[in-house]
Amino acid sequence: MKIGIVCYPTFGGSGVVATELGKALTKVGHQVHFITYSQPQRLDFFNENLYYHEVNIPAYPLFQYPPYESALSSEMVHVAKYMKLDLLHVHYAIPHASSAYLAKQILATQGIHIPVITTLHGTDITLVGKDSSYEPVVTFSINQSDGITAVSEFLKSDTYRHFAVTKDIEVIPNFIDLERFKRQKKDHFKLAICPNGEKLVVHTSNFRKVKRIDDVIMIFHKLRQQVPSKLLLVGDGPDRARIEKLCMELELYPDVRFLGKLDAIEEVLSVADLFLMPSESESFGLAALEALACEVPLITTNVGGLPELNLQGVTGFLSNLGDVEDMVKNAVTILKDENLPVFKENALARAKEFDITRILPMYEKYYERVLEESGQLTMDNG
Image (tube, rainbow, N blue to C red; front, top):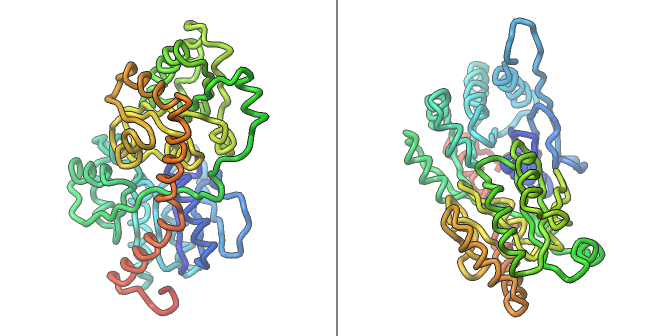
């Protein structure tokens, strides 16, 4: 099967999932063509079935904002036509679904009929998509897709609740590559950070308001008063400077370290004892799944899709939004020497349920179904 994948080429969840899905598809024999404005961050290996097509966005003085959507649609048309794609799979509705719709219409005038699948990832529905500036186009382009998937039951329900979507949405959860995300022996690293046997707490995010980094800091501030511990913060974003100032005011240095953006996050998770995710919104919680795969139990809020991933009292604990005291109490419970090994074992067992070898066939079957329903399934692509 020849598949065109459109995504944001960044460290964000939708881009990571799209890139890892494409890489996995090539390894089982499918031909994958990435269509993005720059090379995806995790597109870091060579495979004879893997292609990358860069969207060229001309800069003209006339345009205050470069017309990315038009350039993207044009590139989709070129790739689909000349590479003879079987389908287009776009990740994140804005603006990829609407650009794919336009490309599909252009191709149809040339006698080329190509199905479009849109995968909804979260903020394209729960935040950005609800904006009145985008909502009509988002609703229309989703309904015009030949197939729609969402990464959690929560996101599926939220889409139906806030948009006039008339088509069925297939839930295919996010996944993890357990060959990459697994606990590694990094004893020297752990010893350097926690020389006196302290527990190591980790948080990773893009440091935006929705991630509630203030709660991360307050949880750690109270936790370290009961359990000797250190905190590693991975990522960067608009709230970082303010959070650094907060750490100084609370005199948390040198027990808190800001590591910035890291691609090899599994190396950090391999030495962690606890992962904090007190977000106000998570459609799935991919970073939490990565932690589970590295045998790290979770402290999360009970919002969005997190209850579908984090099992209360098994892989960690869920608390109400903003309930720092409850999160601290639960963190102390997990970090007790007699409890931690059990939580770590449960974390890995849960992650195995989302192994990419289990989720990839779900996408393949869905591709075949959409192709069949659109009348495009043949012996060559089936």
